[in-house]
Length: 574
Image (cartoon, rainbow, N blue to C red; front, side, top):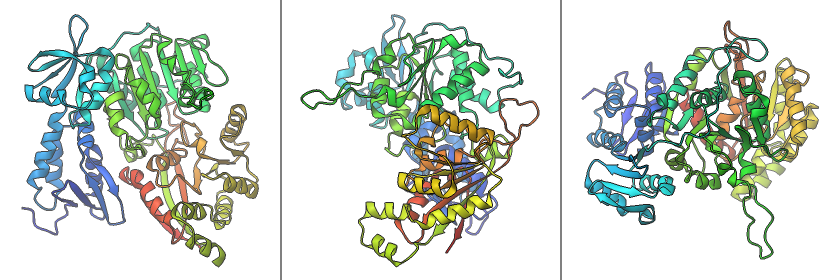
């Protein structure tokens, strides 16, 4: 047993809760270890709380981490003896990954095989499995109806039995696409080491070990480049789904700049245009758009979901996979014979559907700690500051005190004092490119008027958005007020200050995405023409109203970024 008072920062409890002291010299070592196989639960200043879960261990196993590696890390960092049940649980859960497998027989049939017959018996009794099984072949093998390949994985992960899918994929219509040796503007570029590693981890040399999974990289680290690398590696017709029409245009521009694809080989499937080409880029919103209700009031059909079947796709790319709506999950369950790639900055889903991502898109294949990329200059260095603002007077305090919980949040979020604080921050950053980001339109419009800055919301036409983004990039517009439409898949490389004035309750993914608006590097290093990068300094301000529920939501929002190594400086005003 290690004596108390050592420099080891970790205390491990028998319920798989891990307490990490942040002040010691080995804090960062411990944080980076835990990020691989544990989830951060809360992060007050001195002690961060993590929890080891089955899903966090299965994702670790999918990236190649062994139980011995996880346990050795805990033993080296734990102040006290590691509880035996925690060691046993880690071995058990990591050991479950790969014990049940989907494989394809020579005749093309799909079989679920297991290491022992008890697992097969357990599988047969999982909810819904009787609909998915074509018959029992022997004690350790079940014949699976091919159209239910995804349903089987969903059903079994719900009983704690992750399935490794080795059944392979259809080839899809072949597409001759190669990476260019230089950008379309003549600047040479090469894929960064970690991007090439991510593509290799996903593709796995074209074997059944690759072809489905999620790549986790920070905003600004080039997830689109990884997606393009995967498209070139697979070499088949590809469907790309992303968050909004601006992202559609950015994908198109990057594909033309970085690959040998011609403009007539790339189609956009949006409200403006419905082109189906060898590489087709669409939005989740368009895919799930419903027709008008029928005469009896029943919801209209999703007329665009058949896009999944309108080409012999060899690859489907899910950009911002943490945003995947439920209907797309359901459609994806029947697409397990096609290669699937998810791209995201965070696997966190506020609806708790991380298991569905694991089962239907695939396990995590690759990730890199944000701070590691910051240290190497691939993303900007960022300082996060939380500014606590009082209400302007007694009237607002009384209004807040008498409101219900949901209304309390809105009153705190729309605190009029925030407008004045933002104005002072913008004045302080008059030479910077400043994004003001918020949730509530009335508040954003007031900010727009106060700052004399353009505003982009969901009502802003796509063409007008593109013009404003272009002017912001060029420096013609130094300040921009944006709603949550700018949370995802927007490339604004010159933004170096973000001021968040309101958000979606305790959304961790939103906090990560909003910081990501200013993480794109600022000054090009030699030899990297595409990155526009080499570090630089960014500021991320979050304004919250003092002594309100907004403080609790802010603490939850910051969890993911704390896990990535960011700390929030606290400043009180007024």
